[in-house]
Amino acid sequence: MSDYVTSRANPKVKAASLLKNNAGSLFLVEGFHNVEMALKHGIVEEIFSTKEIEGSQAPLHIVTNEIIDKLSLVKNPEGIVAVCRRIEPRPFSGGRLLYLDLIQDPGNLGTLLRTALSFGFHDVYISKNSCDPYNPKALLAAQGAIFSLNVIVSDSASADDVKTIKGKGYFLLGTSLSGAVPFETYKIPKGKICLILGNEGKGVEKEILDLTDQNLKITMSGIDSLNVGVAGGILMHGLAL
Image (tube, rainbow, N blue to C red; front, side):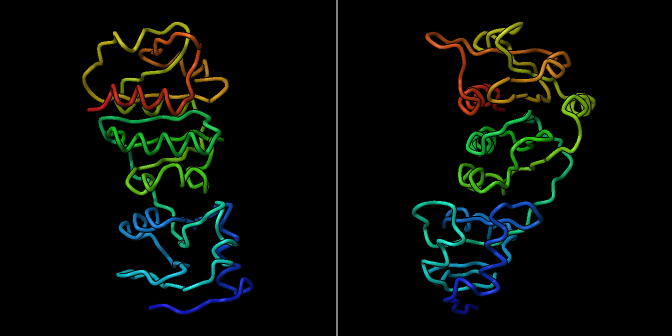
């Protein structure tokens, strides 16, 4: 069932616009693909769209382009924004776990989430003080991947997180430019593996690297480092089950 909303001052529009910082239990998703993914997972509270949406069980508000502009964070919005509920995390237990230590850039985080889903890392553990995975730019970069992942956002120190993961029987693979073995020649161990990726500028903290079972590096020439999203893609592809 739909209604028409034409004023940017409408209470529903004003309430939705306050969610652009995604600080609470509700967040905004924009773009037809992302909204479709959110609908499939049953987390959509209401939709603002410039046209009718077939088959949606969520309340639908047909709105103007001006209202979409008020709710959107992109220059050329597709004409649809949805208010969604955050997904409650589950205990992690899969064969591949990704731990992200102090990732700050939302584009990198979204890319890593999308890549994690692509290569079977269905559990993603994000350290305290990292970028919020529900950041609007992270959501756009993830292209709906967050809805199919078990994303755990920690409120503990990173070293404590890693100790917890190790206690669950995971083999810890850190990433470092020094004191590490080349990934290209590394024999991947059997069993559950946790891949740890670190901050864009500083990498994985030494306190965490001291806890890992093995630290890896990617052999390169002409430059001494890769973007964390690119490095994560190479490593997750090679570690995929």
